[in-house]
Image (tube, rainbow, N blue to C red; front, side, top):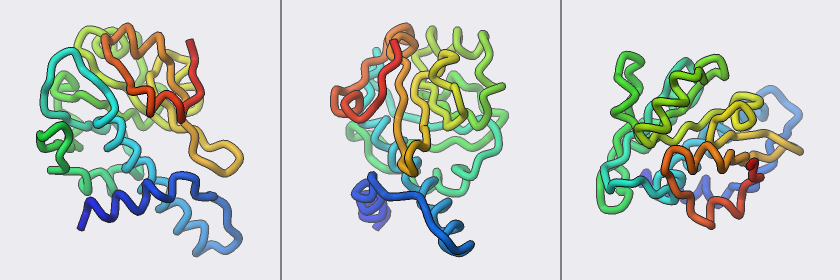
Length: 172
């Protein structure tokens, strides 16, 4: 059931995020975060880490994604159950994908830790990729786009699938 829900929102990848009424705007906001959640599942599937391991997606900070990420708990990625960690006290070394709610969380220390521990950093914060983050969700022309900082990804010894890279604007 959850897998079908996720496939539905992937199909809606080019969903237009505009509307007129307040109710439509609320639905659009929901759709945006549901779509970002589906993308996170696909990031787990389309990223190669130096060592094969079960994938944990963690959220750092307060984000509407917190309401949607639990839908990914237990999904199979490379025949292993995906984990979702929403505990803010959880050490980030337990994460393979770390979603940052705010740009201010992207510190030099965090960037260094992501490099040495092979953590994929993701955010929807403006200028995230330009500041060294790895994958940024960006809303452009009322569509959800991806911006990838390929140098940051490579420095963390991660490899992104060409399927993912074809969908993204690449910063090098």
